[in-house]
Length: 244
Image (spheres, rainbow, N blue to C red):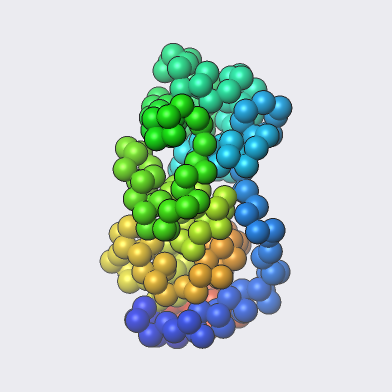
């Protein structure tokens, strides 16, 4: 496959998806399924769809630049320590940072969580709910989220795609690396540009499954260092140093 991203047609992307499915397994989920990380205790944090939308936002902030296990532990600490989102928003910053310390960058993430909760509360007139995003066009919803300092395109896309099923591609480090090696995204593209390109080239119904499959491939074979290119997908699509 050529490394020019403008040569990736919808049919070619579907073929890539099918080859990744053959290597791994199909990716399926129920419509509107939330992919929240961490415990789901009683209380405001997770008992309604609206609350789960906010929970998705909070846990995605915790997941920034950290392993999944640390995200899970930080989410469990957070939601078992505080009764509801108002308590999280109003907690002393130092106390909140200590609660989520296992996720790394504790002060930064604590500030981002409280800033995000304040923005949601102010937008809704007092409720901790992201239901209003569901009625917005995808780009408008993404723009609202990324107006919050510390919420980038990946965090916004995770919330919108995973929780609301909106057609936007979440691009983490694995997705970005593999996409560049496969020529889906120009090598020189920054993360925002990678989001824009993949949103354009990947059919809407494949945005979630390809997100999952590209992460699996990036973890299993197309790793950042010492990639293992002995697999049919890399043999066909990859042009990294391990494959050429």
